[in-house]
Image (cartoon, rainbow, N blue to C red; front, side, top):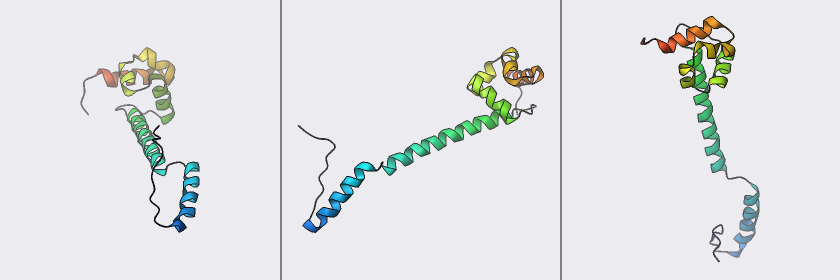
Length: 114
């Protein structure tokens, strides 16, 4: 039977053995710092993308939308693509304002370049 989790550690002197055993026992209790850092980097990247999408919705041309309404809109429609495909009647309950919903719809319906 082969154990894949075991590793051979060379010990040249018996005086190194107590320190090695101490490090092995403490290593079992501590999370791998390299794995934790890669997870936190992924979380930061995900948060950055979410922030960029939120800013893009807040700064739609010809519309002044507050962050709270943009968050509600993204929570309901889930993406900018969902907002672009939605009709004003679908957007009105999220935004609470029919004029703002028509403005958002017109931004994506007209073929104007910024």
